Image (cartoon, rainbow, N blue to C red):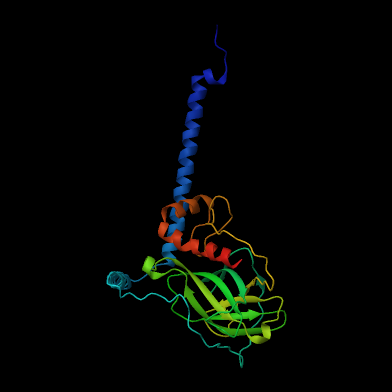
Amino acid sequence: MPRSGGFWYSRRKLAAMCTVTIFLIMAIDYRKKSMMEMEDGKRKEKQSSDFMDDIDYALENMKYMRDMQAGKAEIRPVVAKEQSVVEYYWWCSIDRFKDIRNNSWVENDGLYLYSAFLDTRENSLYPWNDVIQILTVSFRTLRHKVYCNIYNEKRSAVVEGYVREIWQRGWDPRDHFYISNLVSCPVPKRFQSSSKLYVSISNSSCRAQRVAMPIRIDRTKHRKEAVAVCVKGMDFQIPLTLPGHSPNLPLVRSEYIARNRQQKRRHELIPYNDCLYR
């Protein structure tokens, strides 16, 4: 029976199709490599450090690991000690924010805010005040004070925030990563009945930010008992983004998460804790 003159019986057409397919694969690989190199270059520019600082950093981590083996390493307490509420009330007036951002990271002075919640439970940190709990990410450990700009519909207040790293250093003492933090801001008494609150963070007192984040408020007194399960954020399912100079192009981000386990584990603490507060 004679062969038909279809596409699959033409050697030239098959050869051309194979050539085009190979070219497309090479183009995609080249594009992927270029995007990863571009993102790596941005991170290196942002995260560059002095050679001697790197030496001191390595020696300090080695000392911590020796202390940990000897049972002498410092570990942050689980229950925080009571802190005084420091409010900059007199001679401190800040402008109102220009924009509100709710479904994406908010960058305030190098600190990346993910979500904010009003915590009305009894707490050891500020036992006489409600607390705004802000889930944030910083590159490396925060070694300076942070100030919370709190707004309702009419007023504003500036208070000192209390920073706690969610990542325990005993898990991995290195801090050349984006690190998850919980920033706790005591709410002044005159704001505690407000139905809407907003917050931003600054490195210096009495300085406003252009973008603020709305605070999730749940004042339900009689809550229905229920069980919730918090799971990891799925890179392929839930539209999450990474903070700072981490890659957010989907292809590059998936590769970055798969290959950088140390950073991935630190990032995972954000959606875990966000789920717990919700």
